[in-house]
Length: 399
Image (cartoon, rainbow, N blue to C red; front, side, top):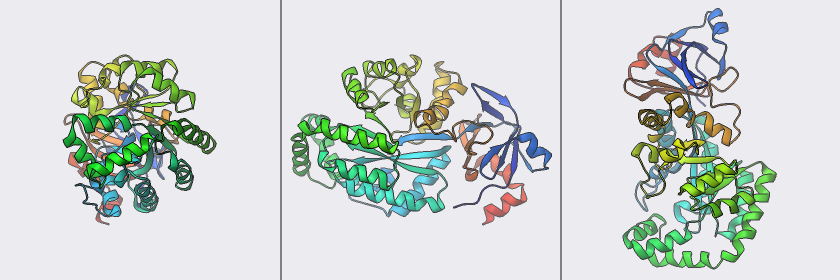
């Protein structure tokens, strides 16, 4: 694993503290945030970050953009080691310090099947020895793959997965086959199938519909025993959200309508929305606009979904549109997600927590440096020269 930064005091930056940006020094030592006054008193070297923002590192609870690194074209797989290295560095370049790779566990097979999921989970564990970003796996469990429920439970326990989301994209698949054959054919190619084979898998999954409730309860009981956070994905209405809530799947990820989000909020369930939806000004699939739900107070966190660069951009868009002040908007990509998964060691800039930090150039609105767990994972732009003035950091960069 890359070494910790030497003990440092970061000075001069506007630091996100609570709901405001205030100028104050921040100390880092042994991978944690420490008292800056103590650090200065010990004569630790300082890095002048005047003109920059010092923000908590981004916590991404769901991103499936990593699939492009593994399979840049249908049927063109790349080695997992190289793909995870690329995902790791992309995350760091956008201020992400913890990233959950949203891996499918689906009847469609291929890159979203159980075999691929288990391969990825093992690769992520192996990758930790050299990781820059805290990479984890979120399993997206298709509800109609009931025969594989025991295998999924065993995989969650074996690979220490702490976050599972239930999906039900079966009827969406049948609609796609009917209304958009070209898109359906592309979906089949991604799964390594032709359209007839994918249709056969969908029809077999549909035959298992009566077994779905029992399989969901089996998985929910296991997740409660293992301490796994779980929820549902793309809830279309309040009734669907209520069904999942009743079995303990409390997280509402990407609700597609106002009614589904309102039902989650009324029950006290966390609501997670897509950062690309915010940046683009609406859903590319025609679902409810994330900004509308955020304005109504129905959002606990933003996710990268299919595009990592959207996460550091979304808070700026929310501030520009007058929906939230920037400091509160940034909380949707940092402290908000940590509360959903009860991650008490990160998400804010406070003594004793992990040194997870994003340094942002407000003039260009870009992440110019990322510190993940006290390790320098990304350094670029005009801030690089300030860090590299320090002899210890120059030596680390040379290595």
